[in-house]
Length: 364
Image (cartoon, rainbow, N blue to C red; front, side, top):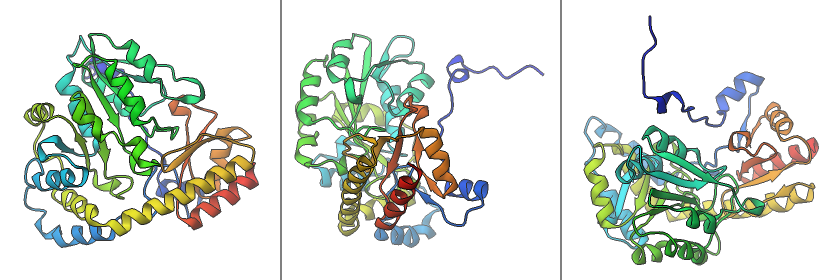
């Protein structure tokens, strides 16, 4: 039987490779206890209010959600200081990335521009949409090359993606840096600022991009409920953008992509200030601890504004990763990002952080 024919874009695309799960490691190494610090998840778990909302609304899952999630749009708009018409919710911010590319970029003509060793969804979504994907080298010390990207924009550049704080480095660019960049690119080129980790950037006012959106309608801010709000498994994200662009996306999107339970969980999480503030406390405390202690071990540690750090161990990163797995500690080796000498580790609870540091010190 002859093979099924599919688009060349699909044939050439490699599937997304997530980190190892706790269950996989337990089975592979015969472990009873495993600590996962690989996927930048919330160290405290999920918001208690969100968990209660899921249970409370579970009997209604035979109903369709309200298409477009207007209640959630309204709540997000109120929290972040925009109109409901500026908000697009999606099945994770991944869906909003996909929608941006589908609506803005013309297959066979346009391109998406970003930099090397970045979030893989930009590449995956672009290529599946038949859009040329171009990456520039990072600057020294892995910094995002904003000036080089602005200079590289052409009339075929539909979207430029900048992640801040960046994944996997943890580096962030300021609102002033982004303002200079957006002024240097054409008005028809969208500058998409992926802010999945923005809640952890300090001081917050230096990294607040929201005022820029009122000044530059070609800026789009991308955010998620997966990190600071602890809802990675519910898959809820959103974009903040001009009403014109949001209107076009609403024309093109599939219905009901944010589930009824995901919407209720997100609404509850927005109201759970105690959980949100405790998350920030745990992450910022752990980030300083990791930075200080791992630096003291002789490792190169990048200055992070996220809920993880990237570091270069004093011995082979692949070996360190494997040895940590055997001890029941999952971290993220960065070979798939093109950074094979480095490891990414997110902050856990105080207890988990202590166990990780003890084991890393023994291995090094």
